[in-house]
Every structure is written in structure tokens, then in C-alpha cells.
Amino acid sequence: MISFLFGFQIFITILISLIIVFQKSSSDGIVVSNNGGQIPSNAQHSFISKFTIFLIFIFMANSLILARNSISQNKESSAIIKSLESEDISKDAIISDANVPKME
Image 1 (cartoon, rainbow, N blue to C red):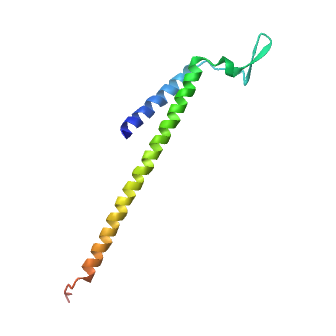
Image 2 (image 1 turned 90 degrees about the vertical axis):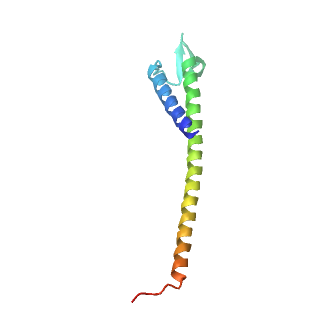
Image 3 (image 1 turned 180 degrees about the vertical axis):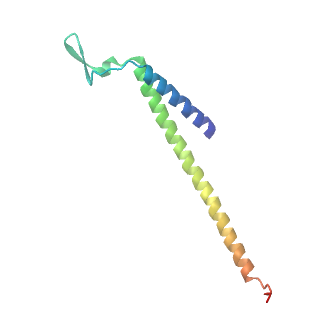
């Protein structure tokens, strides 16, 4: 599943990049002037800009899901490492306590 999410993340990244490059640039600021009146630019959002915002939210959600999975995998792997270390320590203690004749 993680490989699917990484692939999906790459696809979304490429798609967002392409959409942003091909969007019409607007340097009008917050308010767009139309026939002498002022209309907020939010009312003039085209489908492409709304789709871009939607893709950005999908990208952010996918990033959070990947981060959560990464954290849970790191906790599992660190728990395994700690258990292996404790086994090694206990084996060393058993070997050192054994009555092994010393060679002189």
C-alpha cells in the first residue's frame, strides 16, 4: 500500500506542476476590476484553479498518510531492534555466568 501511495504522490506532484504551469497568470491581486466595478477574485475562479486547490488538498492528505505510516513503521523497527539488543545482552550475561574453565 505504501508503494501505491508513493506512486500516487508522484503522480499528483506532476499533475499539480503541469496545471500550475499552464494556468493563466494573474497579477491583479486580491480584487479584480471589471467595467469600473470591483468584483472579488474568488468569484472569478475558473474550473482549473478550483481543481488545482482540490489537488493540493489531496496532496496534503496523502503526505499526512505517508508520514503517519512512516512513523508507525519506525516505531515497529525500533521495537524490534531494542528486543534484539536485550536478547544479546541476556545471552552475554548467561555466557559470562557459565562455569567455563579459564585457560591459563
